[in-house]
Length: 179
Image (cartoon, rainbow, N blue to C red; front, side, top):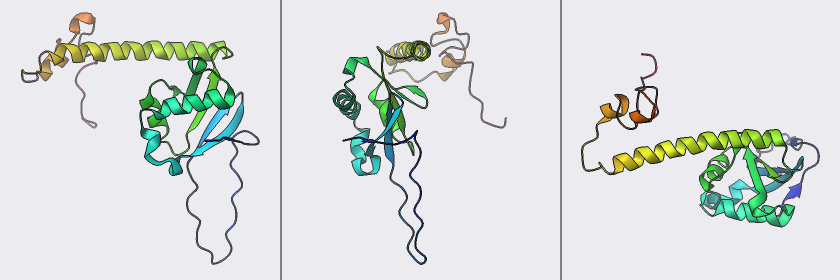
């Protein structure tokens, strides 16, 4: 996985014109682009990597490569995609499914404070959501032998004492679209 430095922002290479009567070219490969210190790099072709990019260990391998190529220690890496900070291997796997994944790598020791604050705010929200899911799964895991009481989730059970009138942290039962 040796990255190639791109010139310019993330501009695509100009398309080549096909000769008259020539067969159409295969669609362009899916390339992971990584930006570090405002410089984009073509990292690797996702199509050539196959299923390995969906493995749990791939995020660690990617981080180890970032240590090697950019000398950012593993524990100082903050990697973002279009949606925000990538934390767990599943975050990387989901982001790599995009047509044109683009990661921005930061050394947290040099990261802009406003970006760090935004990431911390989102992490707080994620932490609260994970804790709520853990409480729900733990409390209903003990009742697995009993038939599910879905009404309890929407009628005041399932954590309603934690301040949510609807329970389960929702605003109430979901309604089908158009009703």
